[in-house]
Amino acid sequence: MIVELRGRPVVAGKARGVALVSKRPLSFLGGVDPESGVITERGHDVEGRSLRGVVFCFPHGHGSTVGSYVLYSLAKRGLGPRAIVNVEADPVVVVGAVIAGIPMVDQIDINLIKDGALVEVDGSEGTVKIIMEKQG
Amino acid sequence: MYLTKEEERILEGEKGWAYQTAMKVLVKLGDLFGATRLIPVKSAHISGVSYKTIGDAATEFLEEIVKAGGVVQVKSTINPAGFDPEHLKEMPIPEEYRAKQTRILNLYKRMKIEPALTCTPYYIQRPEAGSHLAWAESSAVVYANSVLKAWTNREGGPSALASALIGKTPNYGMHRAENRQAEVLVRVEPELKGETEYGALGIYVGKILGGKVPNFIGLRGPTESELKHLGAALASTGMTPIFHHGAGHEEGLEEVTVEEADLKGVVEELSTASGEPDMVFIGCPHCSLGEIERIARLMRGRKLKDDIKLWVCTSRYVRDKARVHVKVIEAAGGHVICDTCAVVTWLREIGVERLMTNSAKTAYYAPVLNKVGVALAPTSKCIDAACKP
Image 1 (cartoon, rainbow over the protein chains, first blue to last red):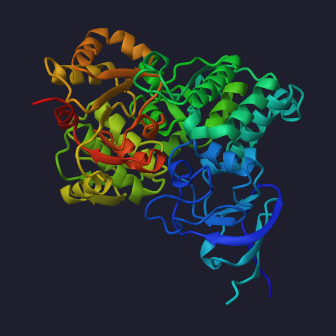
Image 2: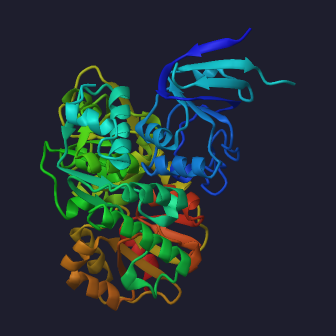
């Protein structure tokens, strides 16, 4: 059975990918290496993981407002996430997603998404479908 | 959200791609965060200037805006860039970086944005209390709302640019009185003194508060400079765009107590360098005239140690006002650098590995952004570490 979570549409567009789930807010300025898309914030629960091609599920952004450009920059280089799922969208991440054209949904209980699951985000409908839990 | 006929036409692309994109950003933010309409702003302050921070893709975005004829509609200023053209000897950064930085600055100029190149635009022109602004640079946002009592959301570089291009902002969040009220009482038990301790408080409280608005109880006569450091640090670890202090004790608010050990823990955690610093940096956020005067007082008649750099960073405007003090700092062997700061320039490229600073915000960001070790210490200790005994 496919579980469908309903949230709020933020940025239109559909994307399917493997969920990278973090329980901690992230600062895109300083927290992510813009050259590689790898999360570098010390002690972060997904430190060392790459944003490239994933559906990035995290509570919300924080930190410097330059973060929007970092997200745009990552997307331009093909190092960014395919979609973003937030608990509560903050302006830094929203504007980054708007100008980068990354589908985005918020008001989702990310505890219901397991790290490594295959999910599909519909930014126009505001839904996240869990297609398949992580295998093995 | 209600849009006027003119705003709707811009959204449909009548004035071209630049204004259409700007309007899209404003309308998206307005719709998401419950705005009812767009309101005029007095000024915009735009982050996303240092090439080191924003990289190539953001430059492409700015270029597209310029190509499409985007010009700002209100007084607009920009954040610091990656180098000071008058101190190139002190910052021998690669020619390629300088060229790319110059390209970004030219793009902003073509949009008719003032090259203030500072994170403290309020020292150049202090916004009136109650005026609506569209400011990015999280430390300036908190300062504007909390110290100057102006009204601005915490914009991103692109959303501040969008507001600059349109001359308006959606009326949500900090533009409404009901959202500016304190939500958490933060009782500060130790008697805080100096920028570093206020910064440590900001780091600690930002982490535990999320986006809630604090009212700090127990601060004893903080200076504007100390409040600047508190706000800058608060915005580094949290989402809060405003704080209160010493106001009425609202009943029934959630309470948090901060003890001396909590703040000591922050300073220890942020101090990652071992060994002597090779640079002492003061000026994050950029120094006020008063801060530079104090540094000069601490340095008068002294000389820097042989293998250490001392940078005091500020805006060109404030440096010009502070000429007498600048001479004292330079006579001791230090530099008063403009248009940039240690964090947004290429520190490793100019040979810095261990940075000492009085700024908790710098201590928080520099290990990741600059890949340097940090020692966080009060201003006077920073000066003592830089100077011969």
